[in-house]
Image (cartoon, rainbow over all chains, first blue to last red; front, side, top):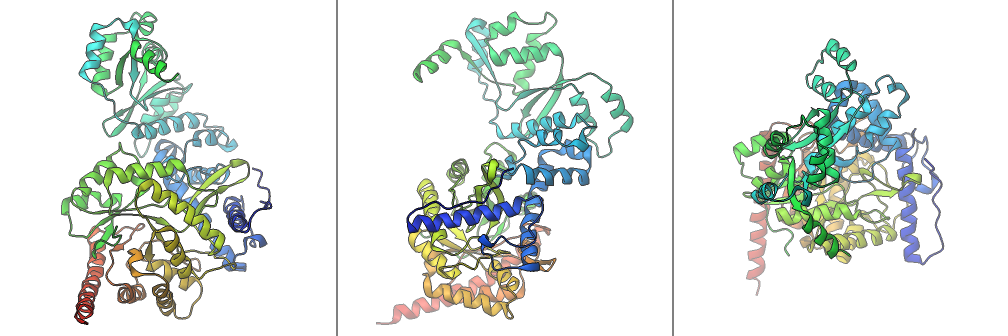
Length: 285
Length: 301
């Protein structure tokens, strides 16, 4: 990360005073996110504390940041935490905090690129499923920020009465598919107990990859591994009309049974006629 | 708007206490929650807040606006706060006199998720006034800004700390959230021989420069010593010197809504309520004194 020395351009006295504070703030932030703490305060920071007192003060802030990272990421990535153990997880969390500083002031949303960070750690290369496991944890976390599905009787009437080629099935907000070359759901499931069965884990890792469907079930997140035909069906619903999805359907896939499940579990947000979609599009042009 | 509105003690409601609180429905003047923990309108916490809101006044206390940030506020964060205010209609909205957002090289603007110290300069004042006014314009109500505990401070200053807050409240129309534990932490970390006297002197200076009506809430909390520093970790009962400084503040400013904050090493809810009851006793005494003074004043021809 390029952290050049901030400079102050020519400006009016009031603005110059504020700009001076802007520079001071950048310098303090650089000290907080530096890989190693500065032994002495940068002169331009103008802090009162020197020597051991500077070290202690800076350490208090750096420790506070790392503790925030630890707590937030523990909550967001429970499966990865179970896989790595607390000590190793916290080490990566600390590195993540310093190398990918948060953009937002709500700790509920600081881990959005934690999966990529895990995949970039050379010492974790022997556990290549960690990135996808983190994506699953993140999807389960984020789906709880999405509004519950709003499927209404009128949506079901449209499904029964209208031409599928004229309908779009809009899936519940936050629900998503995660494709993995690892048995992602099986690994997740095995880590739901405090002491995962090592033999079962070894056996699972010899299995094929899985596509996992994540959705919101009331106030909780849920997920399950999907057969290929069901995953294809969901993908088709996501990009085209109901008619398109039905055309490409695997013959063995039971749409009626899926619809019953979708209604029960809140997988569909609403069903919209294409004419409404077209009108909406027209009204924005 | 009267930003004081009640003279009752309240407690901070944290997740481990949700069940005990809802089973006991204790008698407290108000409940404080951290705004950011309730930004999500769709989760279980939102349901808890809605249920609590039906019976208690809510004080929303934020930690993420970063009001002193020279690069400005995060508009999305402000919108989330505005939506929460709309949903729960709090009696007070507050955040801290800190910065947290700034550009950091190639990373762009980052948010340190901490309450970072600011210098008490004219430049910092301009930044605060602009940011506070933006928040108040969006929320359509005054907010409270809390004085910080800080582990580093700056040699350059145009104002004393009380003078800075007097100016900030005067110019922006915001109120002060007076955190007495933070004053004690700062005095102890400064190595002041008599920290309690230093805190009382700070309060005296504030009383000379700012009307009591500009103070909207008081915070009391515990602190601990860690690796040579006093850390404002809200991990224990309020210390005796903080109680004494609190009594001094009530003498100066009259009764004010008072919060017992406890955020780490959370005890049983009963312990927290016991601290609130202690604050309420002092508040009741202050109310009685305040009434006596008010009546005496009214009697003067």
